[in-house]
Amino acid sequence: MFRVTRAEEQAVRLSMRLATVREQMTLAQLARTEDLPEPTVAKLLNMLRRGGVVEAVRGRHGGYVLAGPPESITAGKVIRSVSRDSVFDYPCSMGDVEPDCVRSDDCGLRPVWKHLESRVNEVLDQTTLADLLRREAAAADQLQNLWPLAGN
Image 1 (cartoon, rainbow, N blue to C red):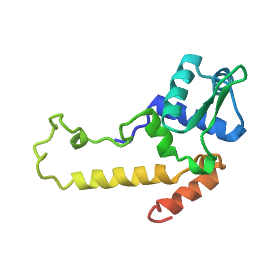
Image 2 (image 1 turned 90 degrees about the horizontal axis):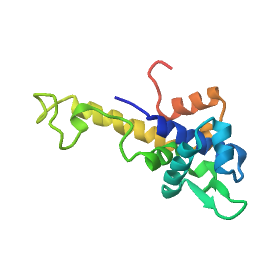
Image 3 (image 1 turned 45 degrees about the vertical axis):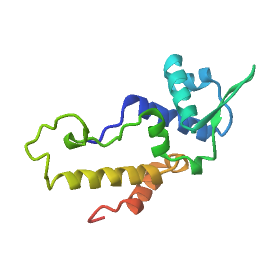
Image 4 (image 1 turned 30 degrees about the horizontal axis):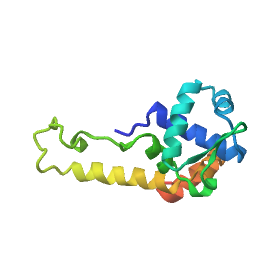
């Protein structure tokens, strides 16, 4: 159902690192501080650059910086830079693939899945890198405000 790939999670971590330091970092520095292989970091940074999340600074003292303030870059944008697929997946969302269900033409469950997918994307698109840098309790409060749970 809800899944975040390793590459998506690593891209968020790299973006958060750049948001934390608020200055240019080299590929090697990012790989070392996040304990990731340099080829992996290079691939992810290229995707993030194409997605408008980071900018590459060329030259002898080059590196990478966020393409904007942490308050303007959402978790959804970071994730979509790495993967065009939704982080929310369900059997009847596979497009041309023949579903594994006899009710594929008219199903009361499909609207539930679509609604959940929209809510997940809404939270990701309303959560910025600045929000992710908050302490865990503050981040939990922010999520409760965005997407209230019954009984809390």
